[in-house]
Image 1: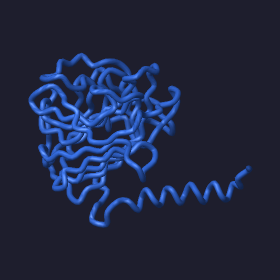
Image 2: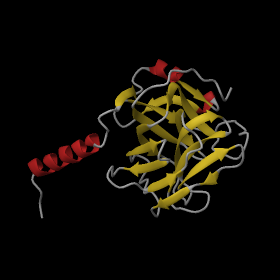
Image 3: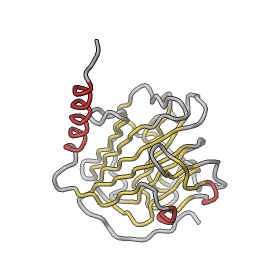
Image 4: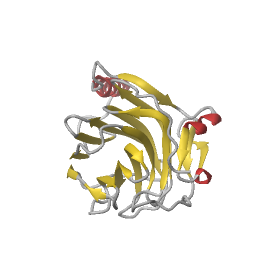
Length: 233
């Protein structure tokens, strides 16, 4: 059955409106980044600045993790991290475009970090092709090697080929302890967890073992807690 262009466009904009409607009324857009200006790389603190660069994305520039970081974590946790320096939040919605351009294998991943208090205290979601006790889950790093805290998850993420891009969203509600991860479909989370250890923290992105590209960051929150951080270097 052929679909008319008008129908496809109507469906596209309807889905876009549904996604936007899920932003609570008391949230505001506190940070947005498209990486079109090369100097914005200075907004981030990396575990290894030499592993990151401004690269070419789907539509213009992006942030690219192009090699493994030379970094030894305090406890077992992701090695490749770029943290947004000046965005400290409690409740938030963190949306980003991701391109995983590595080889296909069960742990093929990109990660989003949140609740970052220091290099050994934070949460992260490891989005991978297949789930197990070390992959495709939500983890806490709390002065010991990362531990999975996921309560529900799907069977893995389809990253597609090296040119495929995906929209990912992390939703955090501190008092409820709720953590939800969305992958392309903003109506049904691919992972959920409940934890109340970290009430606020910084946000970041990267990978455990792989490479990838990151673009079009949007962060909504009820408020922005102003602070400057320097953790990894």
